[in-house]
Image (tube, rainbow, N blue to C red):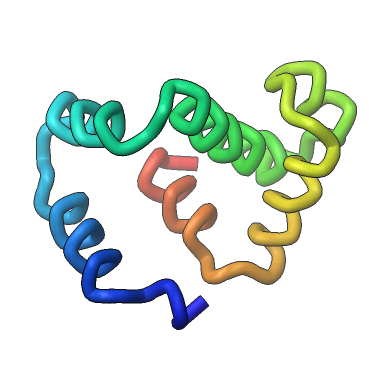
Length: 94
């Protein structure tokens, strides 16, 4: 994924890393994403949380409404990804 790590992406990362207020972060996310994108992105984190807790795909699909494809994609990232989901879950105390 190194090809997407551009100067613009680095600027966004820098801004997000410096924001200490959740409302400020939310305001930026609200401006950057559509409501659907924000819901889908946060849904993936919920899926990661449930996968890490050992829940089945069927239980996760029922609880979150995520498709089996989304659940499988998140599961693959948890197992073979860059570690972002794991780091996020650690930040959440999971």
